[in-house]
Amino acid sequence: MYVRNQSVTSILRELNASSEDIEASALVSMDGLLMASMLPPEFEHDRVAAMSAAMLALGTQTSMELNRGALDQILIRGQRGHVLLTRAGPETVLVVVTRPNAQLGTTFLDVRRGAEALSAAL
Image (cartoon, rainbow, N blue to C red; front, side, top):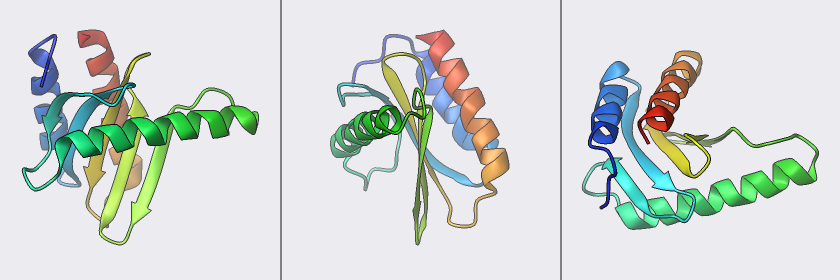
């Protein structure tokens, strides 16, 4: 894993600690490369990175095709929780995994702040 700035890992660690609802997070390049991770070991980190980048690319195309403007965030709601994909700069994506009963309003706020901090750190 290549991290240009060690503070990126610290930002992910702080994001995970900011809310009991946030279980894991990672920073991924638009090319699908894992830049930094606070994901549990049972996740296939490289696969998560590649799928996240692909999902953001498809979401971007869909948003533009439907005249919704530039894509900012994707929410995946599953039976065992949520996955948030949020732009964290022009070439990176913040991936956040939450609990199923997460308070999404405050989680969105925490994730937005984390994405802004990551963008500034890169």
